[in-house]
Length: 254
Image (cartoon, rainbow, N blue to C red; front, top):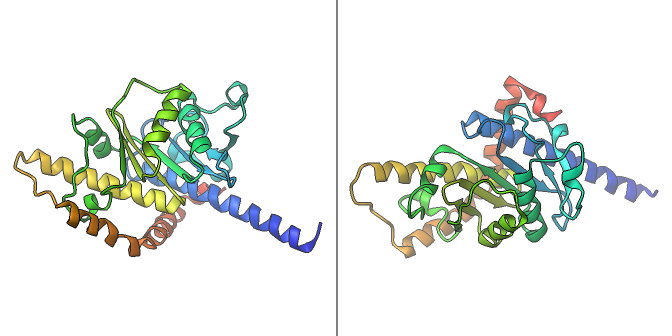
């Protein structure tokens, strides 16, 4: 093997470890923010260029205990995944496996039942209205799936959800929760963070029973566009959050 090939292999290994560690950090942070739910919910991240090889949390392992080495490396085209001794959760495979197979651009997919996102999803009309900077951040970036049919464990469900989130950053899953798709773990976690804040703002505003001051489409779009130059915030924020994990328990890196 040439020096160049060795260096390439080393860089790939380092990138894989960095991705594993970032995804593990996202699990730990999700729990810290109070968004985890027992041992359910799932985060995944594509490893291969076509998105079909991806990392996923093990079946029923609590978010607060996940380490980089715990993450499963799965192939969306492998028909025997669910028959193996370390098979993932059936719902996770049906949804994340299908999404990564259909949406190679969705490098990271985070799904959880954060309190205010769930409350929003339970409204008859769960549309996130542009009320402030955080709600308008998602203007034009949200897909809505209102066909909840119980816990999903069939590929058809994954196909429908993939079609709903295609070209979007967030998917409000009616009577269920939220899913976020983005390029990096940091960007996905930042959207999850701001989506929960946005949902909280809307639920609290609705709770007053008074009319909402909804921004015009023009102002909402301008506000959403205004977030673009701030994209670097995501990495800075995520890096800071990882230092808080390191102070208390750096085992997520293992």
